Image (tube, rainbow, N blue to C red; front, side, top):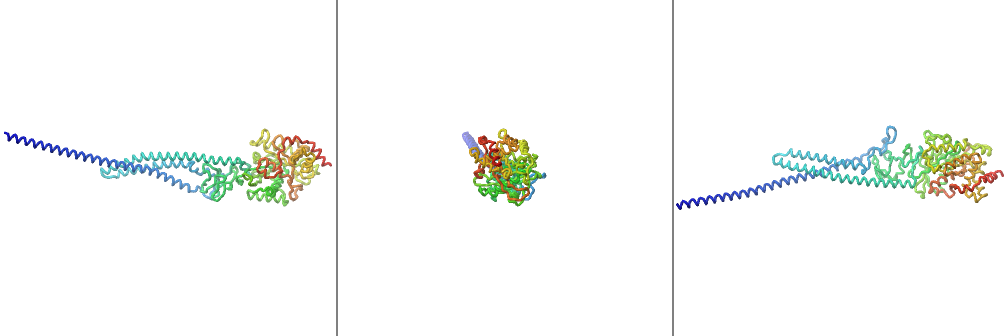
Length: 606
């Protein structure tokens, strides 16, 4: 019985040990398995993270690549555009109707004034186009992968790549494009402020120096001419600091043009030396950068306007310029040829040709450039000559627009249009004489000015000064009445009243005209003009009609110098000390009309 109990007890112990061993093994197995599973999960997680990181890095890389590829493509296209001429030399730069094709109408703006914005938009479009291409690439890679694991990993990596590409691509393109766009806006604003400052400085400089431009053909005044590119010939209507460049501008033919007055081309040519034209009629403008001075000559038929012009031009260009140390230049070959004709007429080698109406315009002009180191800018002096019949009929084709900006008018009078002078001189002496009455000519002059809406006025009077020149004052009938001998006589007889030769001449001319029935003309001129000065002059000397003789002019320069000195102090200071001045009211009140008769006329009787 006891043995059986021992045997049963041993069996139970063995069973317990067996269970314990099994449980222990199970525990070990479970522990090992759990660690293996944990390790496997860790490895799988690592693989997933690695694949995700790789995909994300690829996405970010392709995002940046998409952006910078777009930038590179846009930059390449811009370089190609900047090195491809829009047109070349020899092509016609005119529209079908004959009007000019202007550079500004067909050329792109400067980079910071438009093209930069287009490039930013181009970069954005290019970036998203590139992103789309890369997305297609990732999808293709997923489709081409083989095997479950490889396909799963490929899908995982490419999904991460696409997500990263979309997210970072959007962020990169948006942020960088926003930065570029903001920078372009700032640069554009700074560009506009800078070019406006440079343009304003040039305009202020031009305004302070009174630099303008005047067309000799259509008689328009304008602030800026049309310039032509010396390489291709296309017209630039606003070759100034602006949207096409600040200090220079690249023409459509790739030639660099100066955009400021002091800028130069590669050949050393400044802007003012480029070929230029009037923006209204297209005729050549040779004024460069200069201050314009204009003096119209008016008068009836045979008054002597053209002869006056001939005498002044020869005296000034041939003699006075050298005496006053002025550097004068004729602006064109045509002007040089015309001056040779003037020289021949002055020297008595040919007869002066009367000014005749033209086909398109009636008023002719002779101009020249005056330079001196004491002048802030060169001067261009225009002498306008109008046919007497056009003035008498007041029907000039250009409507006398040049009166509105001229510095003064010289009204040439033929005293032999007055019968009393003819009788006093015993006839005309074979001279060509005017026929229209001075009172009527004065009325025509005022009617002409009334038709000009922009004629400047000072109060109720016209501000343009008028020099009334009684021509042929060297004839025997006039020299002792209105010429310098008569002025010297009055100054000797009454030195306290008559102190200036030209003031005295003004008084003599006025009294002479009044004594010969032209009081109305004198009164109308004084009533309608702020400044009127009378002169006695002789353009060529006492020469019979059709006779060839050298000019012997008297007091021709005085009237022109009076007008110039009134409007241009710098140039006036270079013309000598004996320049006529305005006659003030205090001086006029001292005059006594009886002196003309009691002293001057009586001296002729004696």
